[in-house]
Length: 266
Image (cartoon, rainbow, N blue to C red):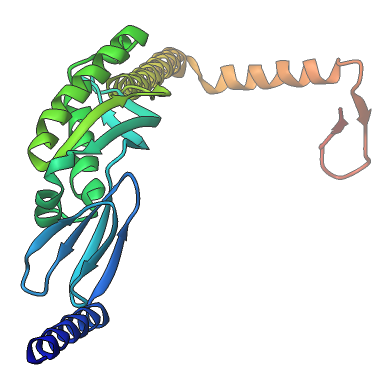
């Protein structure tokens, strides 16, 4: 009788402990294809399998997609000869190493794509495309570059519990090469310098012609000056008046006056 009551009391205690555990505990449901990591208030990490899991109500639970994932990326970088290369809708695919989920949660956390994958892939793109000239980036070399980028980035990401599957460069466009732009600018400046030099030469030539003409006038004046006597000037005046009076469009009006002036209207 005593043993029976003791067993009944023990059973009630177990039930009470179970109820208290459920009441005080929390429930975390991990969906199919995902993994869960619980972090206790003391900083202890533990992996949660798929399905419903009882966890400490004060624990933090993080969920990670263990399936293949991907995103599109835009890259902007330089080639070996200074051309600006731009890609849009480039595809990056990856997945988390399944049995390293706790390590990923402890070292990086759920924002691993922005913390790890994006910077590493961008660095790989810059490093690989810097080894090509812009005129080499045809379809075959773009595929080759994509494979090199994938290999380089995958080696960098694997120690951080990320398996990079592929980086595919798409819609690659080449902007005007920097050196070509510099050549064009240099040619324009050179052309302007040549034009200014030509304008200077033309101005110098014109000035020289005017100096020659001026020297000719001065020499002519020096030759004529000594011959311009009063008698010669008076003779030239008479000839000039004679030419003016004899012109067909000249009108002569004689005005009665005490002086001898003659008004000539051309």
